Length: 100
Image (cartoon, rainbow, N blue to C red; front, side, top):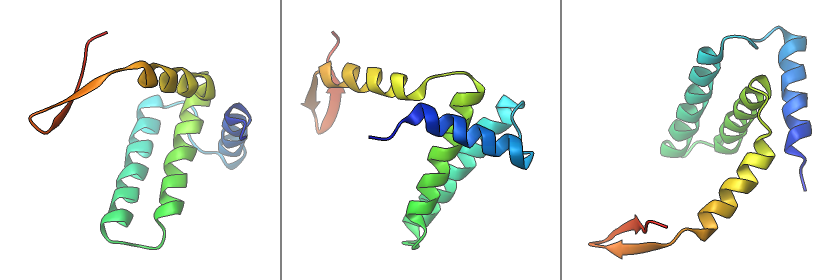
């Protein structure tokens, strides 16, 4: 299994080493959004680099999590557990979450 915490640190260290942004949080969100847009474009245009674009999204997200001192692995696992416990129904062809 991959240790996301270690990946976060590795991504952050690369940002520091290369002189990339590590202080402007708003800009990091914009970069992450931009990478997601590029991934969608690759998907929509059936380009060969979709996997690489999705990797860029993950890398920016890991870097942002490290900058914000968030253990993304812990948060992802907690959210997966939460999602698995939710219940949904189909209503008029739309999936609707039932309140817990």
